[in-house]
Length: 575
Image (cartoon, rainbow, N blue to C red; front, side):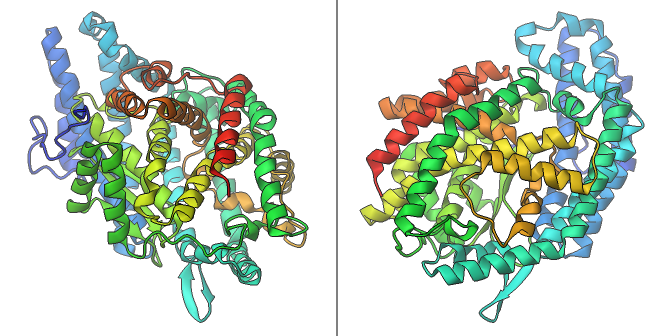
């Protein structure tokens, strides 16, 4: 069957409004462009559409400069030059562009020709712009700058964390490999070293979070909200669900997913023959087999993933190869590199960029497949002229990534020639799809509490423990109570992207529905998946889910059959 996924990732989009050589890190060159847009006379539908396209071009040019500086900073957090360049943008460019964008959005909403534009094409964008204008407050601009700098400080603190094990200094990501070793003493030693290293910065991270909570609360109050949670729901453009839906999700996870999660962990404990499950027992193979090591170098990871993507669809392999050729992959872990992984977009070129900390683990393979899904999403929508529609709401953006993990799972044998190893990796993929739900519910419920309850650090510690134990009852933390008290420090989103986490849970329900469809009709499921990605953000969330062949719902009634299906698949896979 001919692929529907053909895109030309090298097609260029030359500047038409922004001067070719203009430096988007220099306010003296940016400001006149905003003024031209504000002063332009618009006298027809064609002219207002061209004005919108020029706004998108300007936005993309500025956003790309910011992204390049962010990438440079996160790839080497201990480089003062890169840090200074990023800080300059956050402190000197971002605060000056925000009032300008507000003025442009206000101009658009008030313009008579705006109401003549076709609603089917511009309705979603109008909703976004109306929301942005309603939330904007001049006094929040400097507070948002402080917030961004504090989030950067969190990255820097974590990027500097290393341990010395067996005479070798290692990042925490590199050390995580030892948590897969069959020697339980080794796992415990490394767990203790990494946990104690994190606790060394406990007070620093607590202080950063205190400041972030205070700043965010003030931002919400300035915008007329009682608390930051309600503000964040508006800020994150959650038009299609409410905090009450999130509470229903928490309950649904507890009732529908937790029984399967407990079963998985109890099977692990029993198979390992241990009296209780400890934090260092969850990544090792329960049968005592050697850790899965699918690759040794970044080149091997890239070549293997390219082949997997080709098996999903030939065009996806071509797109991934293009990313490697254009040096759009920053993969290997090293000292000074920010933790975690992300896919970001170079908005002017409309290219994706993948950042991760690969050390040769099975988890790294799935991370690459996950971020690859994000990258394909960006490429699928790159021909869209409106920047608002070149990305989707995060609740669906994560369907792209999590859906790709599941669609690619049948082809993990590219890395694992041994059938038993392939089944182990496939089982890991399916287990992770459900083991993720309790952690998502934990982090989301914790954020709801933090931003709706005035509190001190001790109040927060107690609330964290209560919420954690509700969703994570399978683990024994005796002797490591202080580690558990601050376990949430490791969750980057709490610091850098408040309230961005339940999106993973919502998206996983969509991804699992895509996976169920693929079991009946793999090719058809892949085609629908791509068609939905190509819509970008041009449709409301329920329509995007529908396009992918899924229902936008994440309560008990939706979660229960998904848990049952995964449980059945785990039984089929076996150990």
